[in-house]
Image (cartoon, rainbow, N blue to C red; front, side, top):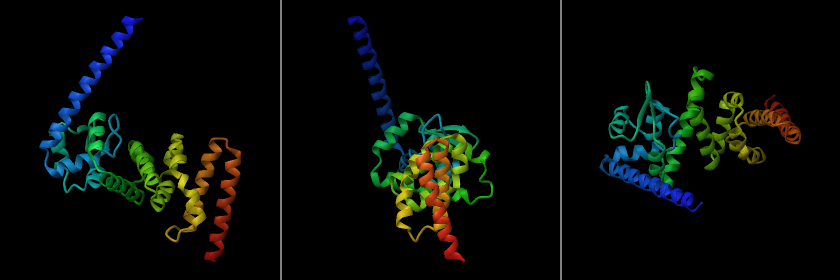
Length: 236
């Protein structure tokens, strides 16, 4: 028993040593990057890390890059990996180090750009299941960012724009991300049309139905129907 405990401690110390050396190598590489690439690295850390990946156009938008060349430079520096045609991924440890070295303000700005990017994708004609599915982990990250930073109008747009994709996956992340919608409904913010709010609540009712939460289903459906009726009256 004592031998097993000692062996476990030795293995733990060895792993910790490897992680520390890896972190040192990452920081050393980061130190020699240009300021643009260093900022880009921290911005790209808002994407889910490997084994997930993200497209080049999303990376350019989130990191505010003028061309794809900077992504190639990060690959050459060993900070990104090519995950397919026009796709990249970031190792978990590199992502962790980048997040730790980023300021709260910088992380919020990058996360907000992530939210904005996926809202813009909703408006595209090819916003279809096959196109969105590879980006689902990043879409869910955008949901979490909008919820965390209380970006209620953006959260509403994400809810209604991607619900059909997330629902098919049976993901509870949608329920978590939509927790701010109750406040939005109660406040009736002028920035959000009542019809869109009602649509979001109906989507939540579908989530409640999937979870067999009868009480939530009745309450949410009633609110949504009342909002729909109210909107119909004000527009006629």
